[in-house]
Length: 423
Ligand code: GDP
Image 1 (cartoon, rainbow, N blue to C red):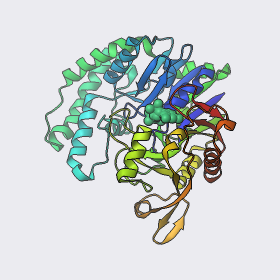
Image 2 (image 1 turned 45 degrees about the vertical axis):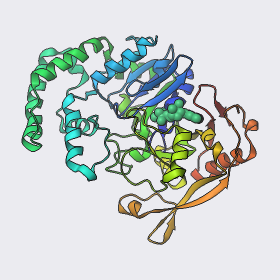
Image 3 (image 1 turned 120 degrees about the vertical axis):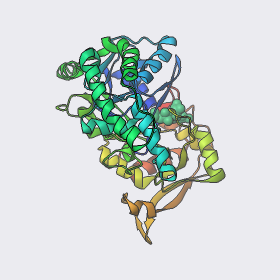
Image 4 (image 1 turned 30 degrees about the horizontal axis):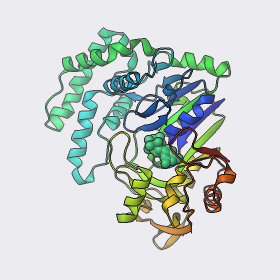
């Protein structure tokens, strides 16, 4: 049984929490793309955890976690993230964490280049998290990357670093006029943060191929959502990797595998981080209230997120490109303060109404068409069955289900493990 859990919107839909919830039934959880540029917040009986790189299954005993070849890994960040977890009593060993030898290392010079470029762009900046993700994926396609497997061959590693740093400095020093990167420092950094993870490195393709063959239950965990996909999202305000479910088998290292189901995570309202078009964005007091109610601050950066009502146009597109077979609607409880619930039902572009999600400058010109549904005005965080939901809340769920064109199977009504309803 192979299931992908993906976001249908801009990310931060509550995927981490759903993976944590659903991973109890899975043997293996795999992260298949991205780096530490976003985060999942998971709250369980052991505490509150922010995960940027580690798969969410790491918080479950008996779940094997794989960091796939589609990932870019800042090994210093991984070291610190792992330490924060082990300090809180989470057991992390080569038995429950396996890192693909083919994954790529996000180097300090990638962070540097990310900063240099965002600074150069000033008010035209992409809103990058400045963690080096775009530069490291760029190098992947330039075939000038340090891969995790290189940590196992110190001589190859050293030669590669020296060659790549020489090339990088053409840009850093020659292009941006910044201080050149020192190859020896890079090699020392790779040893400092790379040596400890050697026991975790393996050919995860072979491990996973065996797991698929023997019928193990495998979950693919995405970072960010459909609209942040490098091909299908709001380029250039996207991530630099494929956040789409169809990429999951490739980024996991098992391109021959076929997904059995795709759980799309849709939040009961919208949020986005960084720059770029966000058609249904709320402003002022209305936005502040929703941001506070939903705790919409970046898990990786602490930045306040942009917020808005549920965007049916964007979500329907997200459901389509993700190939979602079922939906988990998260954070419905957050809307309980609203007298009337706003929903963006269509866009108006150049005087014409559309429900097809546009890209490029048509998206820039889109204006939201907002309609209001009745608010439920009660605390629903204690609801555990569909029958417990007040009528207005159930009507909202049914409305969304019809509008985005996919069955809503789970509704989450709070951040804790038991705060959800199976519809
Ligand atoms: P992710 O990257 O998609 O996992 O999203 P975030 O890290 O932004 O997680 C969403 C945040 O909302 C976390 O703080 C969760 O604990 C919290 N959360 C998740 N589901 C719910 C829910 O149903 N209700 C409420 N009130 N909070 C939730």
